[in-house]
Amino acid sequence: MLEQSALQVTPNGLKVDGSAVVQPVSYGNAGTATVAPVPAAATTTLLLAANPNRKAVIIFNDAATPLYVKFGDGVSGSDFSVKLQGQTYYEVPQPVYNGDLTGVWDGTPPTGFARVTEIS
Image 1 (cartoon, rainbow, N blue to C red):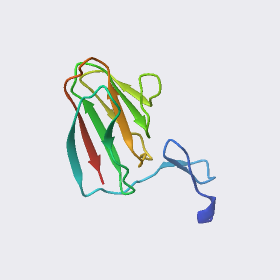
Image 2: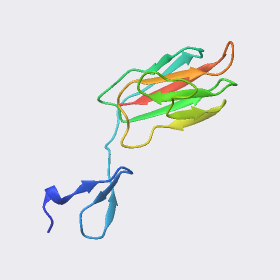
Image 3: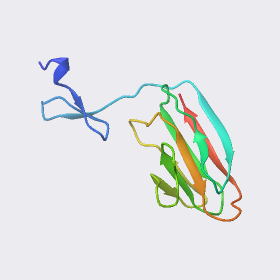
Image 4: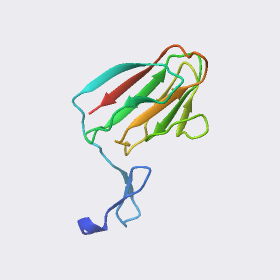
């Protein structure tokens, strides 16, 4: 039997215990889902504040123009984590990033919203 200290979790959320058997990691259940509409803007906008209890995030860009999302501050059209075309969504991968998420839209003036769902 392997000791608990021999377990490792890989970046893609798989548990490796040295037995040549890879097992999925459970991140537990969540009790709260909060949906917030964030108006489109051509300047850096806070989409979601840091939350150490975050379990998942879904962002839907209901604007017609692309939304650039960054894990952290200082998002721009050339410095971003994810580019969401209009009418598309993105699920933040596990293990979920729990810092600030910022965004900025293409277009002058951009119209629409980011529909941000945080599960904690």
